Length: 60
Length: 137
Image (cartoon, rainbow over all chains, first blue to last red):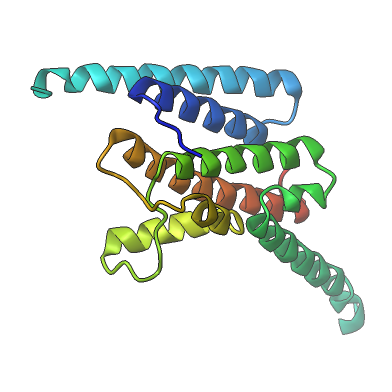
């Protein structure tokens, strides 16, 4: 079993899985969970892509 | 108030604490089991699936499954994080027959997936323990 995921695919998958787990861990009601998951996923992606762009000038 | 009446509530508390510790350990050994035994079906299924997916994908990406004989401090921390996945640590070792390959980016990401699985499972086990003590809903 081998997975050759790209940087973006790895980040998306990681953010999605961790957001789902955080939602179930910290909220009890379904709607609150979904909101928490969406918010967490959004922040993961924004911060990840932001850090990526912040490193861009030093990447070459 | 006599000593007997003061001591009376202590025994159920001790029993409850023992049960909470047992549930925490069960949750660490098998992700989601601590919640399953408390009839928290959604959380049990979620932690089992999420930790399982992180382990399978991390090992499939040929991440580093740390062992106890690594030597340096970072490897020891990695080993502790990996051990957090409980029985799934051995699942990762079973899947990753070719050994780690961190010369590629996906191998390095795989190492993070495995560590995240362990840490997440420890959080879930701690939640199961707290829930059994009545401190979390």
